[in-house]
Each structure stands twice: as structure tokens, then as C-alpha cells.
Image (spheres, rainbow, N blue to C red):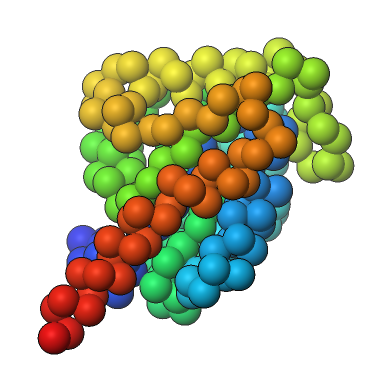
Amino acid sequence: MLEDKLEVQSEDQQVKLALIGTHGVGKTTLAFETCSLLKKAGYNVELVTEIARQSHFPVNAETTFDAQLWILHAQIAAELDAARRAPHVICDRAVLDNYCYLVNKFGRQPQLEPWLTWWMETYSILIGVPAFAEGITPDGFRSEDRVFQLRIETILNELLNTDPFQQIRPRVKWLDPRERQVWGERIFAAALPHLDGAQAAQKSSAS
């Protein structure tokens, strides 16, 4: 069933960009900014925002195994739904981000990792957003515990350095902390070659 959905997604959606990184680093704000810049440039894009905010299960450090499974499945469902509405999708996180919170509380789950690695291949572009040296911007939802924030960032990097996720690491473009003021423009510039390539391929196949 999921394989069928993945096939449909690859046919209908040219480009899917996901921001990855720990919480409290501005991924959602950057996703909105990127979406706005792309729409102003004439691209038809859809935004997928943080699924955990819709969860009725516990989140942050108090999360449960059921909560993380729900978030992982809901994230994929939201991406599929967004791809149905627009040819290009911007996600303010990837499934790997959500998996980090599960690993933090319950350890790695080998039975889930091939499935997650497989889904990570559906992202055309992965942009890594580093944690701020100044700490977390309060938003009333995510934990403001700096130690917890950095622990999730450490887990993400550990996963990207080990199998089966190691193959993903070369595809991640990390933003430079010294360029925070222009991160949106940097993401926009990274997306353009993929978007233009997809449009060129679509025109070629139609002719």
C-alpha cells in the first residue's frame, strides 16, 4: 500500500524540500519564508508544517512510543496530501527529525529504519538548520530545555553518520550559522536548480 503511494508521489510531484534539525532553530519560519519566495517567483508550492503540534499524544521529552509512531505516519500522510495539491512541496522537517525524538526516549528501532531510509529518498533537497548559540526562541509548544535541544541535534548527526542513514548525509546542505540573516535566500537559491530542472523535464516529456 505504501509502495503504491510512493509511486504516485514520484509521478505527480517534481520537487520536495525538507528542512532538518533540532527544535527551536527556526525551521518553520524558514519554511514559510521559502514558500513565500518561491510563490513570488511563480512556483506552485505547498507547505507542510510541524505535525507534532496536531498530536493529542505527549510530545517533547515526555513523548510516548505511540505518539512518535503517530507523528511519523501523520508526517508522511501530510506530505502525500500536499503533493496532491501542488507539484512542489516544502516541509519544515523530515521524518528523520521525528525519529530522533523516538530514539532519544526509546533507543533506535531497527525494524523502522529501512522504512524511514526509504522515505528519506523522496526528498529532493535536504537543508540542515543548526542550533543557535543564543539558545531557543520560546513558542509556547516546544521544550525550551537547551540540553534537550542539543541532545536531539546530536542524535540527528549520529544517525547521519551511521547505517542505514549514512547514505543520506552527502545530500544534506547545512546552513552557515554566520549567515542567519540570509538563510531564506540561501534555501531559495538551493531549490531553484531542482525546480527549474523539474520544469524542463516536464516540458520535454510533454513535447
